[in-house]
Length: 363
Image (cartoon, rainbow, N blue to C red; front, side):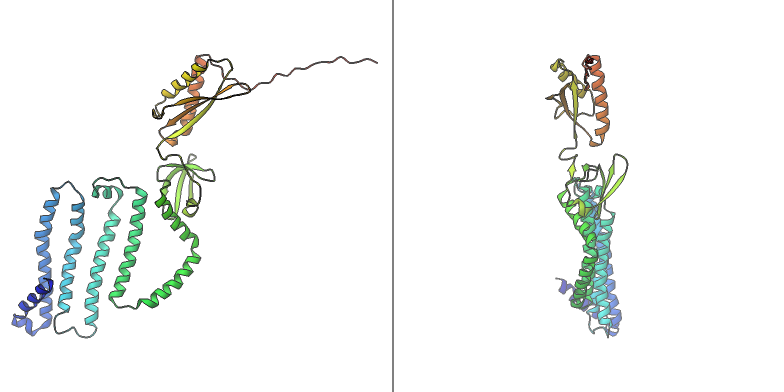
């Protein structure tokens, strides 16, 4: 059908005496026809599709129409230029290479610019809205966005070189040598890059979660980049760790698999204390704290018979790992207050020293 349209268009234009006399005017007329066709598509088809999409609850169709609108119209006009280049007689000299190859390159650049612009403008909220409100992981979204833009640019350049009939064999050979040199010189950077991909894929942690590094630092993950991970400690100190290290270290994620954190409070009471009362008081303290979750419920366990105390442990979970220090402080204060009110003694280690005097022998 396409070839039939092209042939009928050429036949129609050749019927005009002036166009038969000047082939340049014929080529310009072909481009003009394609431009008029693009405008008709814009006024009729695109506007009709917009009205239909506005009636649906989906946002993906609106995104597609907005995305295809401008690049599609420009592509139609450039196809007109390619059609005009194929009209007999052939274009003279270098024009037969420059104009068709330039038009094809422009088509690629137009679509590359459209896709890159859409990726750049789309944030995670917009992406979630486009896909019907589905939850999208921020780290995976960022990785997909950055890698897609790099690959898109690479393949666009490669395709343009093929259009201009550039021999890529020497280029690939040189790129291989340069790639080896760059890989050796930037092995740490590459290790961090692939470590970042490993972190994204494994999803061992994400922004907003609390982790403990193998070296002992604890903090909130504030940024997960391609090269490094940034952690904000409870002392408000920013730690930047290369992803190559993160990918090969043991990481304790306090926020996974559930967004809560377990607190263990070791509490000693004097021998002879009513054990049931101690258990009830500790559970009462836990229930009175609004940061302590109800499921799983708080627990009290008698752990050991100490040298001077019965050692209990109060086990509970708080809603946010960042509250670990503060809630431990508040719970211990409340335990001390409740024990004082109910006469429960908290013993401390003590030692009695006896001094025995011996009489001195006289000679």
